[in-house]
Image (cartoon, rainbow over all chains, first blue to last red; front, side, top):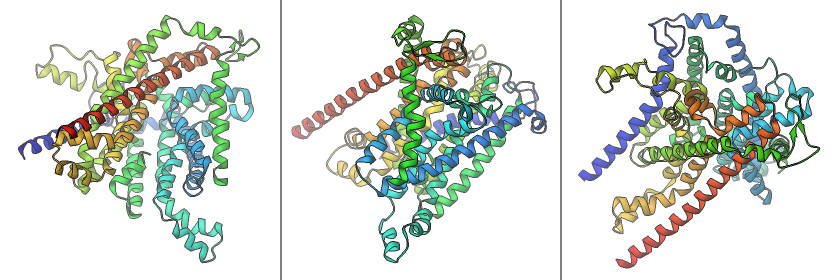
Length: 276
Length: 289
């Protein structure tokens, strides 16, 4: 019994240390957004001024606006494509499923730099709308996300009883009506979680954005990455802290929705991270 | 099937074609004086000859070493954490711990990488603390080293290992472990011969999910590794974004993919051999009893 207690204590300590390791840097980001120094990486006493001055840094605010526009567009694409494909994969099995899943897995396991240079070569060739405005960002950032949404929706569908949809058909619902009134509400929580994941991927994305974005559409990560080797102003940290707060709020909201739909904590974690 | 047609179009048009473009471009050459155009009129292996020089080989070996060490560290850290979460804690506590683990995963990648420049800063809080406590004579001198890069990649990719492992372990029926104990196996034997083999799909998923993006990542290296922590992805990016020689960049990318696939293949073979060795070991154990 003593050995068992020792092992459990050891496992608990490793878990606690891992959480500490994961949170220390985030804690420092939040703390340094209040630094009274010229550079984000240096501590120079406490101030809240970056939270007001950052709104006058138009390069920073513009990049955040571009990032949100890019994220909204690519998330909409990823959610629509991923939902339809995920439902089809779960409900219309056949030989095509294996091929489709192979492509999805290839997309998930291809290093981003390879996608990025391929898209750049291809978009340069296509020209026109593929080199201007937000379209290249929408398209480029939708690929990986739609593959992830596909997996999440497919997993949720696989766990749903198909007889519900058959009952709707027996009760004279048209396929369209059965889809809108039965299938869609049932997969909605998975779509919501997938959408949040897609949105986060887009806001995180540096590499693809670096290669495909057209002039004047520098995203927040690309802007920050450009600064990273010179002086990063604490304003960047203040913006990061606000975005972190927004992320936490949306995570909690989506978790509540998933919880209401009867998912266990384990299942929610699996859904959030696209690993089911 | 019909519902998946938009996805097919998307994946072919925005993944299959572009990746094919990379392969094709690697056989082309630079159009002199142009901004990033590729000349396909004389297909050749010339770019590969250019690419496979000492610089690339050095960086490639460094990249693979960083990735393999990083992936191994992620696995070593994740296994006890995932095992603890899946088997040792109550449902409500598990929910809280999982929520805590998800937060870093959703924190901006670039920001949490840059955060390590604060944590490891020579005159930073932690460095000063170590000096004050007499644990070090002088401040930390870790920024822009391979060590900082190694910490950064483990930090960035750890959640991608913990979650698939947790999901795999969480799905295991506890009755299987109990049965193993009832049949006389001790805890270690149960873990190695029952739990671990059954969690293999999750472990493989975690290894691939960490190793592949990590091998192509050059962002973490650019922020934390300095000149000593160059990654192969950076060479590809430089050919496209600075040197304006996409053909050469594409050739480097193809070499990188080939190296990643070779390592994955080697892992697969080693994994298969290990599993069959474990099986043989188990049957011997059963017979000897």
